[in-house]
Image (cartoon, one colour):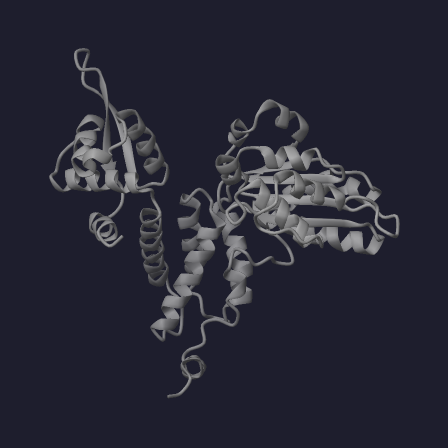
Length: 387
């Protein structure tokens, strides 16, 4: 039997060539210039520049919705700082930590120790032992140099939700260490107590959503690097940009649309990428997104969705009271409280799976919430019953 990868390489070589390099269409790829984020990068640099004089820089927090360039801007500033520090012989490290991968204070500090040359196990030590090992790193080395460390904590709210604010307290109370926090939520500091807020004393930078014209500029730059000439129809980039602008200016979504449209064209042996490929790419992305969200929901929220689906198929108007009755029938003795259901409804609405509308029933009956399903019924049913 021939090697399947060799077969695929041969197939690609004789198929119409759509792509010359897919990497620039990945949102994690870092370009030489970050379009429409010059001002935010300059602000980060302004707060970090003190480290070049041996002064611990300010703590910084980046706010903005998904796909507004927060992670890319922080990584871009990191590369620029490392470059100039090397030239000036300044002993500085900038470490990026994604808090979806390291969800406790112990894990973060242990990982930082390991990256900085101190072996610390993933478990088994006390918190005090790990913290002391970490702080010991900042003593002057044999050349009398002091290390300065900047820690980028991406999606910090996930760690705070799971493990509390101990990580910020430890880092901000360690000499020569500063943090840059990245969050999608302006209110994430509600998860931090007052003593930590005081020691954090951060500078805030807001990343606004991209407009359609800005998204077009981003896509045009990436498309030039990714696609061969005369592959994209003239309306492909404007359409991707307009669709992503409606998704709160999400550049990641725009890049995913363009990449998936190109892959659809390639799979169909098309010579060009058309607006039809973009529209079908949108359906594919949303289909996959719904499946991923529903599959990873807690069991109780999946049961609530099952109840919403059942009432929707019965053409029932879904009030919160009626929904709770249907949910308890499904959950039987394992149901949560009526009050907790309201939390679930809010979370599902935030994910875009349902919508709610408060309706007045008049003075006698007051007001009630009406819940509606916002995703495809058959897709929801298939996903729920294959989990």
